[in-house]
Every structure is written in structure tokens, then in C-alpha cells.
Image (cartoon, rainbow, N blue to C red):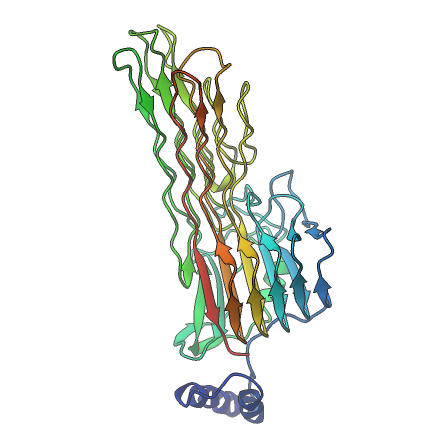
Length: 403
């Protein structure tokens, strides 16, 4: 009998799609009468109605040091972020998963900018002590025109709360769409080798590779560091920058450190940015790359972090006049008081990814971004070294799902 009801429910969903029945009460009545699942899961509302008050930083659970922790999970009935308010987390982590059973309004900011964790998807992690599935973080949801199949969501490695939450989503069987953040992010920018040319060379760092947007999103790679050589050392060896790191399913890649060639017998080399949002590369008489941590050297500015992950799943209407962002942080700069000329800058952090799913209507006059972190600037008065490469942009996707 249960199998018969399930088949009727599936046929009812197909009828809804083929006949373009509007989302809402009529559709749910039909599917409910069929005895099957009436739609997607939009959380249990256990965290109640959320209205920002300006002190909206959320506490990450199961922290692992200062740069990793479980994915934040919230189950709201409504979600309202006021102008000038920022909803974010208290340290880098594996992202945020926000369910809203009703309407959401974002006039302020929801941010995972520079909050991507040092979270390796290829090794066991999170409070669930799991490796991310080869297909990445995947959630299947009923959609009006989807034909995909997924027996169960795969959020392994995100932490117990996220794994438990997505387990409430019913399976899709040729009647929904897959929404994915890939396990492997995009590659970082390559190292540059800067050899003297008439005593002085300036070499800008390579940008990180941008991620893809769409139902499958990927994060951006870290930017490579810049490099330069001194004009007073015609026989000076090269300056070699560090490469940017690769992004992953929880964060963009970290930026590489700068390199400077100034000594007659030394080729100064910056270190590479770590993969999966680890430490930014250290500059050799130059700026450091963005990462966890991003390390400044000498008088340069402190680099930022890498972009993180946002899943926002809204059962009602979503109105955005503010911003949703998972941007990378800037690389560290160089400055004119550094010892030696040609000091260069570090690479920017790769951006994360943003997945926004809603059942009602989307009214967006604001922004949804996963923007690359800028490369650091070489602020030498004369002569300049090389600026750092920008990180890669990350993926952004919005889609309507069935209520």
C-alpha cells in the first residue's frame, strides 16, 4: 500500500509540473491527498523568528583551532537582517546552512567573506569525522522541471548538525534538481620567477582560477604572489613568488607570498599558499598571501582570509536589498620602508560559493557575490615591486524549488 501511495505521489508531482500548477496551497493539497511527500524540507523552525539587532555574530560549534569548525546550522521561521547589520560567524569554519520556513528579508549583509575555514575535504573532519563525498556537498530538491535523482543528501564532513539537517530532505527520483558545491575547488595562480632586466624587473602575480556558477558551484583558487628585483643589483638573482593554493568544498584557496631578488648570492623565494584555505604564503621581503592565517611581514598590511560557503534555503519569499557575500580577502602589501628595493605583494584569497534556494518569489535589488580577493599592492615609492595576483572568483547560484 505504501508503494502505491508513493507512486501516486510521484505521478501527482509530474502532473503538477506538466500542467504548470503554481507553487503553494493547491499543489500541496493535491500531493497530500496522494498520500506522499508534499514538498521540500525548509527546516523545523526550532530557532524561531530571527530579526537582527546589530550583534548578529553566530558561534561556531566544535571548533578545531582558530580556523576550522562545523558548518553553522540554523532553523528559522522568518529571517530579517536590517540595514547596517551583518550576520556572520565568529571564526572561519565549514560554512553556514540557513533554513527559513517562511519569508526572508536581507537589507543588511549575510557574510562568509574571509570566513572560509582551513577545512580539508579530502581528510576526515567536522564533528562527523568524515571525508567529503567524491561528488561534493549535494542536496536534491523537488523542482518544477527537474529530472534528477538522489537518494539522500551528501554533506559528509560538514559536522553532525548539517548532516542531520539535510537528512530530513526527501529523496528525489527523476522529479528534482541536484545542487552541488564541488569537493575540488579551482587551482591557484602559478608562481612567477622575476629575473633582473637592466638591473630591475617587476612581475605581477598570477591570478587564481575562478570557480564555476550554476547548479554545481566551485570555489576559487588563491592568487600567486608578486615578485621584483632591485635596480641597484644588476647581477642580482631572481625573486620568486609563491603559488596560490587550490580551493575546496568549504573554502577558497590561499594566496602565495611575494619574492624579492636583491642579494648577489641569494634568490629570495616566497612560500606557496596552502590548499583548502590553509595558511597564506610568507613573503620574502614582501607581502604575505591571504589565508588562515594570512601573515604580514615587516611593515606590510596584514592579509585577509578566504571566502567561505553559504547555503540559504527559504520556504517563502526572499527579498534582498542588501548583500549575501562569500568573498576572498586581500593579499598583504609591501611598503617603501622595507629593506631593499623591489619589495612585492602577496596573492589574494580565493572566493567561496553561495547557493540560494527559495520556494516563493525572489526579489533581488541587492547583490549576491563570491568575489575574488584582491592581490596586495606594492607601495614602494621608487621603484615598485610586483603586485600580488587576485584570487579566483567563486560560484553563485539561485533557483526556485517546490514549496
